Image (cartoon, rainbow, N blue to C red; front, side):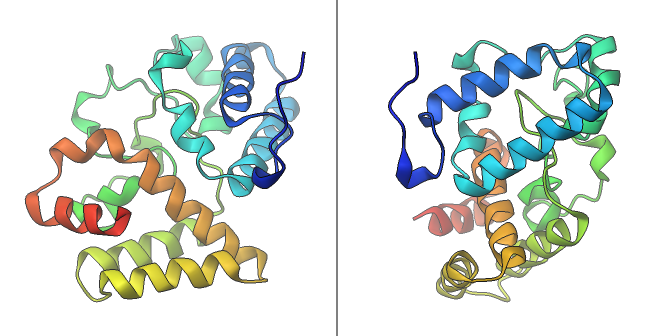
Length: 202
């Protein structure tokens, strides 16, 4: 039975139901063909663009999947998730995000690992092109190096969101995705970066 549709979000099902569906699909991804995995990746990207909040839903441990996957599943899902390594097997990757190498990589902590080293939990694949990823990181670098003020950053996000250009909307979705994806690492942020992030969320 379908849940109540959510026309404002651009998705047929509620946000929570959509997250559950993707998590169930992800649980069986090791049995899917490469083509099917690619189609699922594209579908997830479209849903993220329609409602970036889906990224935060997919990181929730309450959905019952967590960040664990066996080695066979990890090999089969690299094309879908970028690198489905569990945080348990990569304890030193604490501040790397799964999609755009995280806000931490792009400025908050100044790390420089590449996407293959990112640690992911739940269903948070890399769904944005490299140029979109790079532009999102560039904007975060400007924010955390204080080249852009918080007010200017908010105006930038508003401009990207309302732009008629698909690429601008992708950059907006990528930045929002990263913000929601980083929440679990906030306790590890230095004070200045944490304050900047809090102001940006505010």
